[in-house]
Picture 1 (spheres, helix red, strand yellow):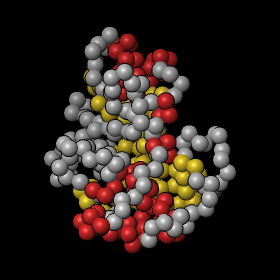
Picture 2 (cartoon, rainbow, N blue to C red):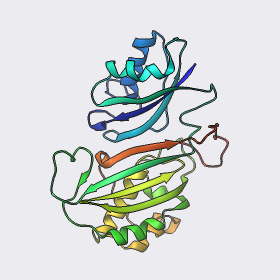
Picture 3 (cartoon, rainbow, N blue to C red):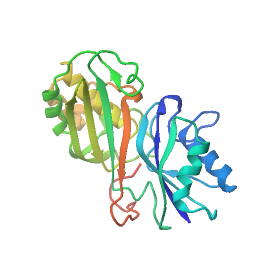
Picture 4 (tube, helix red, strand yellow):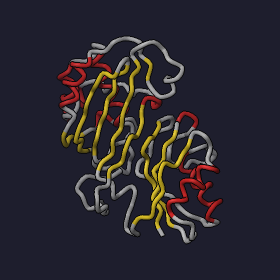
Length: 260
């Protein structure tokens, strides 16, 4: 049977989601725990390859097993073996054609910027700035990021296997929450470093280092060639909040946008 897991983690001590030789990763840690329990050489597929140091509250993954343990019990059993910075929030059986990566309708990421005093209880999870930002200008600039655009200027490192840098964002919101500024983005799929560089562009607008109009210009070939690309903010402020599948998940790889 195919098991779906909803996973949360503090990414500070992980080298990202994807497996890497001689590195502590979320995928590697989780895979080892599942294999110890099932006694099988299983492979885990994740919905998103979060960066080194980035966090998740709603990462989703799946694996196939012949272990007869009730699907709902996997969360309890795994959490007894997993380290304190990685937890399973939910486990359930799904149909055999469910794919955590390719059945996802969209992904919701949040980037947090701490504008108040330095707080040791939050510095692992937010980018510390310590000064106020112009949230109104940031929100105005964020409007231009919504829709289907070429996000080449918002990549951290272009994957040679990615031929299409066009992505679709359904919602981009900037909000002041007490002494933090949150950048919330919902989109189909994201290029490597895209979320952190988008947050960087809005951060530059908020601190007065970039004009609002420049953000939309970076979505054009002229802007990509002539304007300085935005800063890539640290991964620690980034969190994968939720992955949405809909009532009847299906493989959507046939869609025109490359799902990476």
